[in-house]
Amino acid sequence: MSESVPVRCPACRREHVYTAPSYPCACGAPVTPSLDGTAEATAVAHRDWDADWVTVSCGSCGRRDQWPRPEVGCPCGAVLRVPIAGTVSAPGPGPEPRAAFRPVTIRTARDAVTAAALYLRWLGYRDIRRADQRPPSGIGLAARGLVAQVDPTVRAASRRDVECLWLTAMTEDSGCVYFSLAGYADDAREQADALRVPLFVLDLTGTPRAVNGVADELRASGA
Image 1 (cartoon, rainbow, N blue to C red):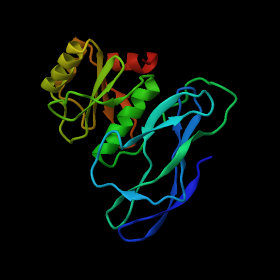
Image 2 (cartoon, rainbow, N blue to C red):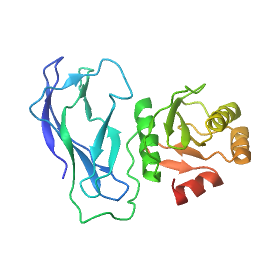
Image 3 (cartoon, rainbow, N blue to C red):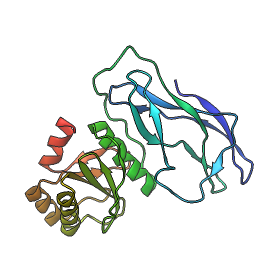
Image 4 (tube, helix red, strand yellow):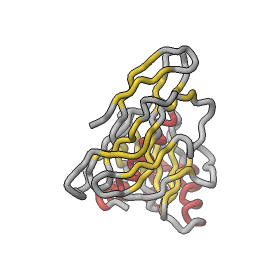
């Protein structure tokens, strides 16, 4: 069961009650970061990929994965990083079939990246991180055997965007997948079909929707 802790904003001293979210492990058990209610929250001054994620162990199968670090937004404008005490999850009898994907609501560009990363993990990809090579547009993610591009803008992804992602994947001898918030131009979808690049559209609930056949295949088979 998710726990709740008081969180005081260091900027305005307003106090909040924060409840840790649970995320689905590949085995199906919910995984929840253990919060430290005695430590002070810190304001996020700048974004850093490593600091935005935390490694949490599943209490059912022992699998260790990275999940978004707990944060809460204060009305004063500060974003507070909630201290964690360790790693914990709800107990279970053992590994179970993969649970349904549980999305996160998209309000910001960071939420879009989080939604894509969670979906990739749900598909079975491991060691998800920020890609070493920055794409021409959007944000790049990488995992074992995969490069992904997340475009959180209101511009439909272009044919060139798809081609650049595919070329990056070819140079790294890996697969690729594209996530877009605004969809794809017609010629981008045609080129993705020709190159067998899976295309997904992220809706504001954080649920990726397959928009071509190869994306349907990836969703069905997993990593």
